[in-house]
Amino acid sequence: MTDDYNDLALYALVVEHGGFAAVERETGIPKSRLSRRVTALEQSLGVRLLQRSTRQFGVTEVGQKVYRHARAMRDEAEAARSAVEQVVGTPRGLLRISCPVAIAQQQLARVLPSFLSRYPAVQLQIHVSNRKVDLIDEGFDLALRVRTRVDDDPGLIVRPFGSICEVLVASPGYLAAHGVPQSPDDLAGHSILSMNDDQRAQRWELQNAAGEHARVEFDPRVAAKDFPMLRRLALDGLGIALLPQMVCAHWLESGALRRVLPEWDLPLGILHAVIATRHGMLPALRALIDHLAETLPAALDTQPAADSAA
Image (cartoon, rainbow, N blue to C red):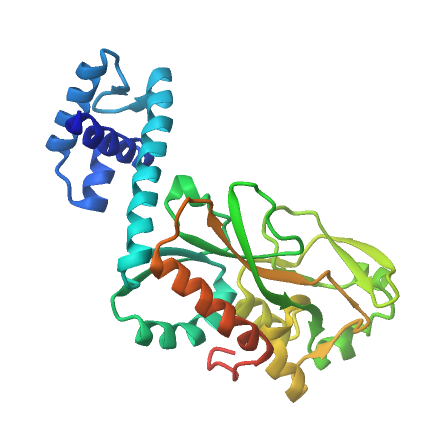
């Protein structure tokens, strides 16, 4: 029976990585051993779990059902191990984290050194991307996200850390040449630099302190999920950009950029962590979350100095 448990764990890895070669690259377990153990599991269960050939890899219908049970079994085993480590262990081991690019560059890089110094046995693997990851299917321990509403998935634990304000900015030169918008409707005639690269036609939902809302629809001159590049284009007079205030605070203070429609902005983005629900939490993950809760709010309020790429 022990062999079946181990084989189920290896089978779950193969399904999650989409094949034997990917598991070998990630874990170092030889493909030959993986294939042999999965075959033994199929023989033990009396069913075919995988459809595999030199060109194709697939999971059968019953294989999908077995995978869900295998994953649940592995999660329960990890929860049992974490319950013991909470009592007898100190923070150690590898944590996989997903983090948006701007947060990684502006805040996370400033708060992690003290955490790593305090917990030398903890390793961090940080996936820096604006893509929303699936914590469970992709094997992440924690994801940092910025949303106007926090995630409400019942399978996730959410921990808010603070708010991020996004503002409209442009260079004085651009405004002198093209005019200063006096209302959200005036933005229709301007060159827009957008951080949303999902589609051609876009819109902003702006609001003011009085609670009024305005919808601005536009075709961006440049669309890219890269704040430093959009800031550089705005500094060079290419258009009006909507950027997190923390990304452009230095240039607003120096006058290199000016607020556009300062009474209007987007709803505040909430920086929060999401963790997959488990019966226990590893000491390293708990220590990291506590550290972020202590340090990120202050890091959001303290603007970093200008970088050389600006």
